[in-house]
Image 1: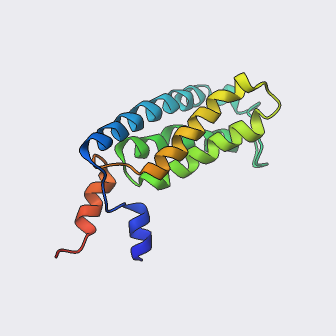
Image 2: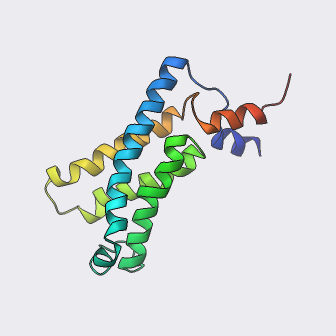
Length: 145
């Protein structure tokens, strides 16, 4: 149980400077990804007929999963709420975009998905920092000494 809690709520927040940088990165990359997801959401009816279906679940379901990974999950990512859990669908979505959906496209087309993927993996490793909801939760869950 402790391993799960440490995974979801990292107990050792980084320094203030690094935490501000992580907060800025969460906001920038989260909002940028959300713009892609919101555009998909606004055009759901049109896109659902032709959206790529690399998982074999149907175009509308694939589109809904992409919207979830690009709109809902970035909200948790930005606020630092269940940070690493929120990053999983975001990383998965970018892997599918880079390695499957755009696999035959020139690198210039695939580059954006790779940039997001690299940023999300690095931010996964770095953790949410001190200024995240998960850090507050971790402080509450830590045993008092």
